[in-house]
Length: 410
Image (cartoon, rainbow, N blue to C red; front, side, top):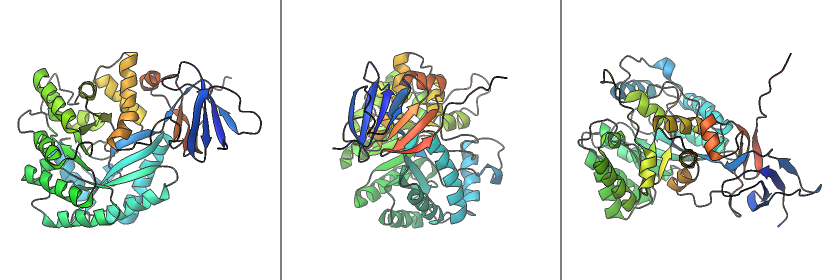
């Protein structure tokens, strides 16, 4: 196979010295000891910096990003965020969602993301407007970013039969998976079963927003685990937030983690949102409210870290940078060793790709040449310093070029 391009002098995980990454027909042809490919093959010098496969976003809401100017924040609670967003989304248009989603996707691409799962709310208030807009964004960025769409029931299901029919239609019309939010439904268990029914009917994965408070009582996680087992859905189920787990004592936490691992239920922790919304009733010693993903990973759970919301009532800030989110998680979780920081980096790369079910991920021959050159020497350093991507390639084609900043001495 003729080599189209070589990225030289790159540091990659699992290799003790610089390597050369050869690319052919959009895929990795070889990862070998560094060498000059000669004048006939285009090459680029990584400068002895760290190169990894593209970053993977497992949980973001493109449809409701960037709406802070349309919402009122008073209490800063989850209930307020749900209510304010529901009010705002009734006025969403296809053009409006497309513009806001495009702005966030552009930030994600510049931050090194090459694969992304977004939730899109589909119900009588949003209609299919957000869905149509995000499908258009997916088409717009098809050569730069792989986007999968989760048709999502944010505001319940059992009390609103029209939503279920709309989710079914979306799955027929381009949605990649289905998800729900049991904590907003008057019958959470039935909500979970109906989402699984939709998934089974269409042969797709499921992703729930789950147990989003700090009261250990009444979790819906056991219901999700039971349905996963009963339906043989191991490896096709993921849950986000699950902040109740952060409130469990060690024995109960370990039991829950082992049950998730055995059932094949993955988890995504959303540090920015979980920190912002939880613990609001505390007057002092405010709890972090962030589930320790690294402890779940140690129990065998596929655990990831992701963005969630950007500039809306759920999270009134954000830039879609997964490296920054990994750093925030490491800080909150008090992870500081080189091994620990490298594992956190894995939560936005290898583990994240595994959660999405992508088997063609990583710097191995035959996989797509999705590469990120970071201004760091290792995955641990990338997390520690919030390293900026200097270049990104998608299927061997350069999509981002951002040279290091320079100080201009006078």
